[in-house]
Length: 58
Image (cartoon, rainbow, N blue to C red):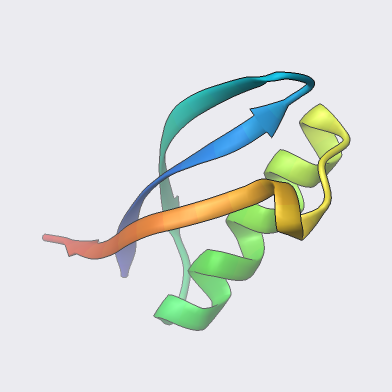
């Protein structure tokens, strides 16, 4: 299944919106993958990432 995840992240003093699409088995894994990717790429903690919506994409 494919999920579209929207939210925002804190980068220093700036807030930046993001949109990610991931293909995983379920919604829980989709959230974990987004947290892992953003944390790894931008050196963010989970508290610096806010998820606004998770939608299944057809």
